[in-house]
Image 1 (cartoon, rainbow, N blue to C red):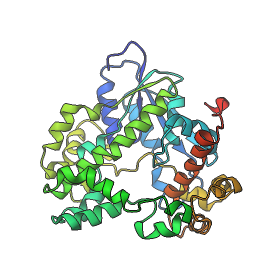
Image 2 (tube, rainbow, N blue to C red):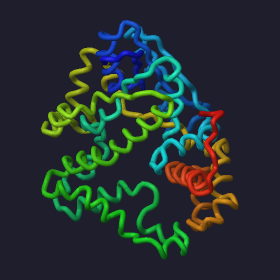
Image 3 (tube, rainbow, N blue to C red):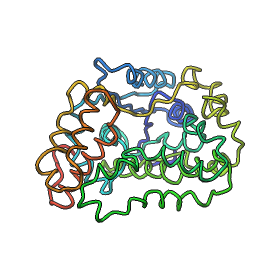
Image 4 (cartoon, one colour):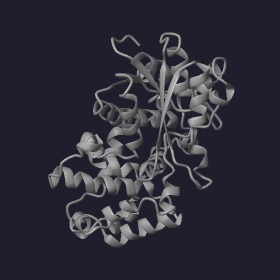
Length: 352
């Protein structure tokens, strides 16, 4: 926390950022915390628990922090998509616009922010991912199950329907699995949980860190991530599984330890993530600009994807038949990536 400029905390309502707030409050006499929230008007039941603003405010009050929050709405992504894609440059999975707005908010007050990114990947915070693979000691069984889990946009058996004939002629559809095997092969012969955590630290966490760094740098800010300290990671990776998770409880010993310093409802709070209620927004017809972009003439003329598959994807999302928000977001970003880096459109300085 040594810095010549003001330092703030990126605060969710969970234990990772709550822990950082606890320790930071002992070093920062005028601590500032920053939280993002969303419009949860008539949210579907599966998303109503995602709003963490109340818990974040509770943590901020507990440590006498000066607390700021921003609320995002269905039209918010469309306001910043050009700048978001321009700053990220390469394509990344996940709705990263909440981090963009959080960076914009916090940049008004501080130049350095402490983030809880990495807590789940280092401490073992995804028990629902570990449970299906825990007993899969045979390499082929593990690979089939784990690779299928990470095929999050389009499954292998759908790709011939998803991509256009022009695209398929230039593709090696087996490449994603080959890349997966290349990344995870150093862990062949190790325990399934160790394989999973290794893979997620090398890929999932790596992506988080790049996105966060780029979006905060876009606002002339530095993000510091205490949980990715090398010595801490080495220590935790050497710990037995039973200390990291038990049953459905991830980060077991971490939660048990911090329950002495944080309210128990925070220390043992179920993970939610910084996730917008987009299933609700799509079903309410409040994100039609996504459809207009990915099914517009300009996008379809590129002939990357089969239009009927895109239409089916959109219909599944707005009717609630299937959660397709990750794929829709990726298609939305990809079209804007084409417009900016291939067509030469400029970023929007008014919404930077």
